[in-house]
Length: 100
Image 1 (cartoon, helix red, strand yellow):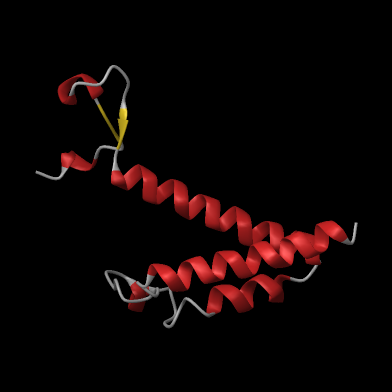
Image 2 (cartoon, rainbow, N blue to C red; image 1 turned 120 degrees about the vertical axis):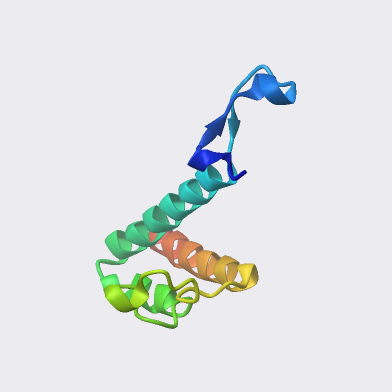
């Protein structure tokens, strides 16, 4: 049973009074936050290449087209690499904030 692809579970089943988010929902939220972070870096620097360079460090295959379908090995799976990418983006965003 995989939760039938649900994003939110009824909390009452597990003894909670509020809905419970699924891992699927948490992963989706994290992906949206990452997108927003790298978009913000590109906007603040006025240069998409700054965010692309960081993102390309955690992608090692072309994530587009038929070749990428059902391929789970496009992105780096090491959480430390992702965290380093987020920190690098955050530092660059912070540097632009201090120059404003």
